[in-house]
Each structure stands twice: as structure tokens, then as C-alpha cells.
Length: 274
Image (cartoon, rainbow, N blue to C red):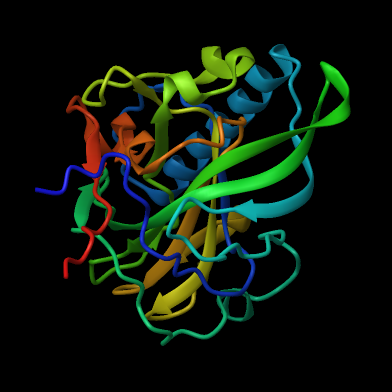
């Protein structure tokens, strides 16, 4: 049996093209009541974003990526997409790029949903480390660090459009998170006690199948029926570069998708034998 501990990830399968949607998470559980309409859901998402900004200001931390490179885990090839603004004036169709590229190898699918009927399917693809120089309010000169990421497939398995959202979050071994940032790395029920989720940022990398994202009110985007996109979720605090496969996992944990159930693992593909 493949336990997934201390083994390299399979090759990255990311493509070119900028992100269509961006979402930040503070790694803190927020309880939400069921919502019955897209408008109410959008309002709560915007409130959550404003709360995240206030929390970030209270901690007086503003991380800015001023340079980027890639340090992949053993067994990975370069697969780092360029990041662009999700609202840079491009249409949803042009932002999405061309569909029909080879679907990356992925793990077993995990389906989750919300109380208002939105359904999502996630499949983990690969992960690695991004190198970048960051500047914070505590230190004037840039401080180099490595930032874990996981790529996964986000699909709409229904016959209706669903609001673009990012259910998956990266969990890392807590002992590998920089000491000054461990207080921002939160444990969740259903996850090993040695692992936690730091603040993360999620971006759409490219379209894999189905239609382009559908524009909505207030800059929102919707996944068309049957569509699939490659998503990258990146940790926003530095970790030890010795991080291995067993130190990095993808979970769905927010109550919006899990209600009162424990966090659910989205497994990476098993390594082929032979």
C-alpha cells in the first residue's frame, strides 16, 4: 500500500495562461448559515474578504512577492504558470484560454457541496515549492522563502452553472512552517495533529474541458455545466525547503462544504509501479 510518506510527487501538469479567479483564506474556521441565492452568497463572500483584510492589518503583515522562481520537489518538472490579475479587462473566454489540452493525471475524485445546492468535484494533481522574495512590515529587506503549492482539478459535475469557488486548502507539517508564522497555521478536525493550514491563495491556471467561465455580477465568475479547470492553491508563508510529499496534503475543511463533518482528504494520484 502506498502511504504517500516521503515520496516525490508525479510531474507537474500545469499549463500556460494566467489565473481567472483569485481567493485568499486565513486558515481560520468561519461558521456560515445555509444560503438560498447567489446574491446572498456573494454578499457573505465579500464580507469574509473584508474580515480577512482587517485581520491581516491587525497582524501588521503584508507579504508581497517581488520575484519568483521555482524549486520543485524531487521528481517534479517545472510547471509554474504566470499570475495575472483576474479582472484585467479580459473577457471570460479569453482569460480561460483554449480547452481540450491533455487532462493531467489526478487522484480519486472527491465531491462536495453547499446547502444552496452548488456541487464541486476535486482531484489532486501534484505539488511543489515556489521560491520568492517577500517583504514584510517587520523586515525592510526582502526575505527569501519557499512557498508550497498544490495543483488540483476543479469541476462542475452538475447540469447548472455554479459560482466559482475554491474548496481545497493546503495543509503542511507544522514543524516545517517558519517559526514566526506558526501562529497563523491552524489545525482542523479530521487532519493529523501534526499538520495545519496557513493562509493560502487560490488561482485558476487554465481550462481543461467544457465552456469558459461565465461572468456574473460584482466580478464573480461561474463554472459552466460539466466544465473543469486546473487550480493552484499556494501557501502565503514560507516553509522549510526540505518539505516532502508526506508533509503536504490537500483537504476540504470549511463548514460551507463540510457542515459539521471532519475535514476530507483529496488524495494525490498513486505512483505507478513497474
